[in-house]
Structures are given as structure tokens and as C-alpha cells.
Amino acid sequence: MKIVAAKKILKANDQLAAANRRFFHQAGVFVVNILGSPGGGKTTLIESLASILNSNGAISVIEGDLAGTVDADRLSARGLPVVQITTEGACHLDANMVAAALDGLPLSRGGWLFIENVGNLVCPAGFDLGENLRIVILSVPEGDDKVIKYPTVFQSTQAVVISKVDLLPYFEFQPQRVRETLSRLNPQASVFEVSAKTGQGMGELAEWLIARRTAAACEVAG
Ligand SMILES: Nc1nc2c(ncn2[C@@H]2O[C@H](COP(=O)(O)OP(=O)(O)OP(=O)(O)O)[C@@H](O)[C@H]2O)c(=O)[nH]1
Ligand SMILES: [Mg+2]
Image 1 (cartoon, protein in one colour):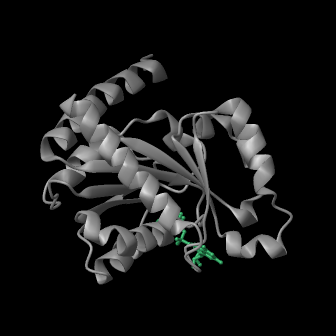
Image 2: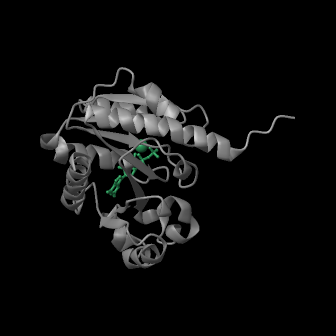
């Protein structure tokens, strides 16, 4: 019987992710991997960020879904260059899929690549795609206990975006609980409270992304 250890698969993924990272660096593109549950607001966040960041570099998108092209069609209708990866059942993107999607995707020096991962709070956590940073979205209707229940993904991220805060009056979600749990689990992570519907907090998130991109460019130059 042949047994392939998960560790080996992850090691192979890490090598491909490193190659992606070199490619992105040479192309001068800043890459953001967006994780979160199904329906948490990933595509809506990309739409909102695209309208705020468009004067700060061109934006391209890779969309990951099990099936269909709904999200890619949405973003394409807004004029964004987008490639859809249909994973055909796989619950996460991997570095190999991203490398394949890059063929034919226009990328601009000084621009952004947003990767919308498959909606899932578990599987995507262990797969580096070669991104500069990760964002995990936690929407208000999901509940403020998700950081406790799904620690791996929240440990792996540079920022947690509490989304749909316009719905806070209707749910027993306390952002402070998320902040407290994160302060023990991943104290380095930045936390944002946003509503892509009303625009609340979106400017702050965009400013943070721009600052992270500038810091990454300085690190390379230094
Ligand atoms: N009230 C409110 N609704 C939102 C907000 N952001 C997204 N939504 C709604 O939440 C639903 C899901 O949003 P999407 O952006 O499609 O979520 P997603 O994470 O991309 O979903 P999948 O790709 O299917 O995993 C849609 O009906 C959105 O209109 C928000 O800030 N406030
Ligand atoms: Mg989506």
C-alpha cells in the first residue's frame, strides 16, 4: 500500500509557494490571500477595496471556488482582470493552482493581486500560496466564538477583518471578545471592523494594506 504523508505534500506546496513568491516579487505585485467562511463577505470586500485602491495600483484577482464562475463574473463585470480556479471539490487553493492561474492574468508593477480562497475556515490555513500577507474575514452572523473554535487559521494570519459590522445591532457578536482571544492566540494580528455595505472601516483597512505594501518594498530595497 502506498501512503503519502501530509507533511510531504505540504513541503512540496511550500517549494511551489516559494517559486510563486519569487515570481510576484520580480513582477512587483503585492499579493493578498483572503480567507474566511462561505458567505463571509470575501468577494464583497474585494469589490469594496478595488474601488478604494484603484488609484494606488492596478488590481487583478484570482477567485477560488469548488464550482461555477459566479464571483469571477461579478468582478469581471466591474472591469477587473480575474481568473477563476474551480477546485472541483478541493476545499482550498494550493500554490500549484495559483501558478497555473497566473498564465494569462495581467499583473501590473506596483499593483495588487487579491486571491479569494475557497470559503472554509480549516483547509486553506496550511497552504502557503506565495502571498505577501493573509487576511481572515470573520463576519458578524458567524459568531464571535470562531477564533476559539478554528484557531489554526486565525493563528496564520496578519489581519482579522470583522465584516458586516452594520449587522451588529441584530446579533450577539462582541468584537471585543474576538480581540481578547486574538491577543492571546496571535497578538501580532491587526484587527479591523468593517462593513463593505456602508463603507465603515474600509478606509482604515485600505491604508493598512498600502502601509504593508510600502514596508515590504522597503524591506526588499534595504
Ligand atoms: N449586511 C452586509 N452584508 C454583506 C456585507 N458584505 C457582504 N455582505 C453580503 O453577504 C453575502 C455574501 O457575500 P460574498 O461577498 O458573496 O461572500 P463570500 O465570502 O465571497 O462568499 P463565497 O465566495 O460564497 O464563500 C452577500 O449577500 C453580500 O451582499 C456587509 O458588509 N454587510
Ligand atoms: Mg466569494
